[in-house]
Amino acid sequence: MNPRTHLLALPTEALPLSQAFKAMAEVNGFSNLQQVLDSGIHQLPSLPGSNYRVQQEMLEFLDNNGLLYLVEDFGE
Amino acid sequence: MTEKEKKAAQKFVDLMLKVTFRICHWNENGELLSRSSGFLYKKTEASPTLVITAGHGTPPVGSFIETTHVYRDKTAAVNAGKFKVFYSNDKIDYAYSELPLELIAKSLTPDMKFEFTAYKEPFVKAIKDEACGFAVRNNYEFVNAGGNLVAPIYLCYELYLELVHQDEHINYFRPARPVMEHEYYAGASGSPISDPSGKICSILIGGTEPREFLKAFRLDNIELP
Image (cartoon, each protein chain N blue to C red):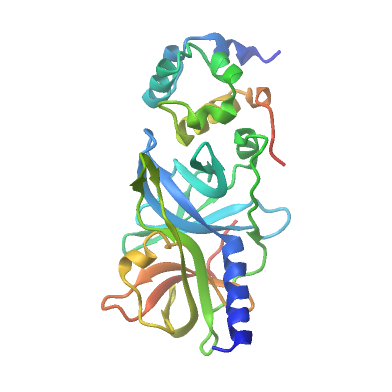
């Protein structure tokens, strides 16, 4: 198990994420990244208060922490 | 123009549209900062896939390639990577990024279908008496249409560009028709310009003042990864 999976359960407020990301999480009722993952990262840009940069930030955060494998890959 | 010439011109435009796309630069809040054009370049099979562009200030992050896919009434966009400026002149940045393929694959919805073609040939030196050209699906600004912000798209192109002057970094082309207003080319900066065989020689910067020529940054004498 990746030792950094605990990051997914931490409150988004406690993570080094942008204010834009944290505002999006609040608007959509996400209190941690696991909830964002569960809702489907692919639809993130179309959520209220969200955009492609928010999705990019989430993916890069997961990547930097070795957690990108948790996102389903639909690309070819 | 004869039918045969029209078909050849259309074929050239279609070829350029396959490799040229638009790049949006957004701030952290998702507000549009600027827009440019660019293309994918892959030097060898082992080389990274690069995004090459030019524009008035290319932010290192927050750049996205517009796709032809519409998702929930919005033009879908994919991460263009982090730009590094490899040359800067006269307030124009010439930049490239490595396309983050894994991050892009993770961002796509299952039904997202689009295709980008990477340019894999060497860049060539533009020469006189050869008709060069570019084409990009461009737009002016977003407009409010029934409550939605949409960007009306038009085909921005020039065919039969004639090289009239060349210095160390810039090609100066004379269009076959009068140079259009500045707005016509806005957002087209970074479009690849190719020779009649489709080999890319430079990227569009904009027009000269007074409006007589189009300027393009040379790619045949620079080193990219």
